[in-house]
Image 1 (tube, helix red, strand yellow):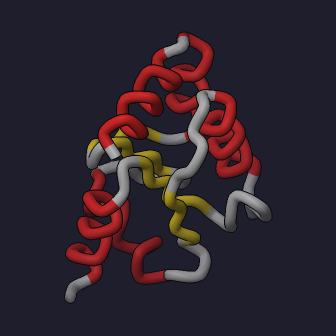
Image 2: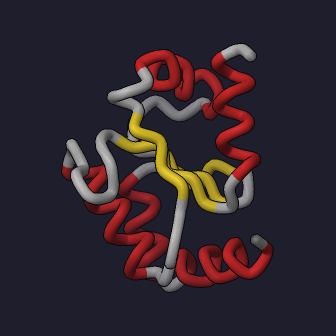
Length: 107
């Protein structure tokens, strides 16, 4: 399986996926930490994460897959939502809570 196929399997295999630096318990950058907090604040009871620091081939190829250059990257229902700034904006507007609820209901 190619690295792009592995990324696609991660994105399509979970309703909410956050490609981040570190883990939710031990984020390795402030943007990843804020994204995890935003998801939790939006009511995400569980979500799948991929630590790109432990998987350099995913870190190198995810920007090509998503056409998004930075980390973290949030996908909901297979669709790229964006990075930290967009995730926090969606939380502030209430939209992230709606998206999370729909994704968890469909799971």
